[in-house]
Length: 211
Image 1: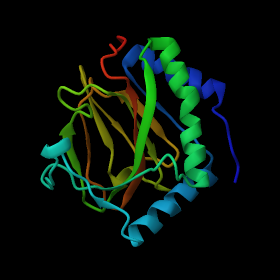
Image 2: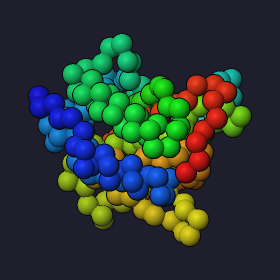
Image 3: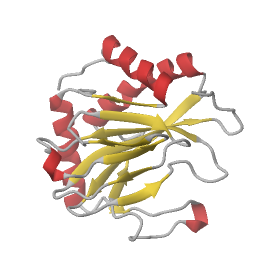
């Protein structure tokens, strides 16, 4: 399996856009081989019953709300990563360091899960940061579905101050945004939509830099 380090040009462009907008999109974050392997692992996990219906809320308030979100998820175990998952995980370290250097965000931890949206599934408008618990600081979504067409739907819709911006879930595309600033939603698609969704987190009590 081909291991590819972050391209400095890719990383510089991503950080530049993130600094100016609070969000950024870049393509070809990982090689097609690694993307394909991650997609295969997701499909195998679904067949084995490793995915569960995603819930809304935190702690004792977590509950299923299919009127809000309809995806299924499978969390990564940092101590039991597959080869492809290790490559994915390691690629985020240069991004974490670059974000901290540029924006003083104090990012120190990362968590991630596979996400599967069956045909027609959606996730209505929401923020990624839990109320009163501001640990999730930067949201990162890497798309895995190959040969995605605009007519397939399934865009990530970011709600911006001057309107909205739709990001198509093309395989290898990475989108990052400030977890506490941007409401977003996942639009329904006509086919299954696969991704890895993750969050850079800061230590409790640490203030977040401003972008």
